[in-house]
Length: 282
Image (tube, rainbow, N blue to C red; front, side, top):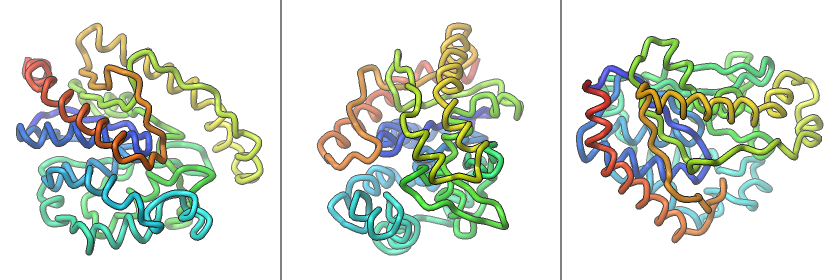
């Protein structure tokens, strides 16, 4: 196991790229002491930590035509663009069983990144027992406007990407001098300002800090990308990301596109192993 940080960006269904890279890690028995998962990144981290090769990809694509899984019909019926019961109960417990015991035995720790809607600040939940803490994965993946907020112990939570899309600075603050970051956007990508601020103000009228975080998210995101690229140039961080423009939507339903992106991730992961090991071991 490597004593360092593995940082997994979100991106909705673009996360199948991450699923491919993580499967390449499983092929080579590569483990990390600390894992920071954001939104879809937190979901895919779970199957990686339980050692279930291919499961993250199956969960992403095998139920695309099921109205309980994701899409407009799911949202209109439940208020969630991704079906909560399907994703966090039926699939892991029945349809594609998750190995909860193997997850608990993983030698490292997952931190699921979520956003406190009341303060707009990130919260990093240490997820040791997924049976009891599935709520953290759900909260991390609950997209604003198209997901219901999750209330736990009096705190209201939504997607971790709002407050900390790529938690490299959190990993550094935790003492990780070696960090591998898996991004779901290609080199050169820059996030644009959010065009739904008016809707956000209407949906979250009492959460001014949260709306402000959404309004400024592109600034923080692009600043983090610049920071990562500088760190990569100095040899202090190892980045893995798609080499070409990703034409997969956040709620993509085209299986062929998703399969292609997963295969790109798998290939990129395999091709990165030697250089990544050299970086981690020097």
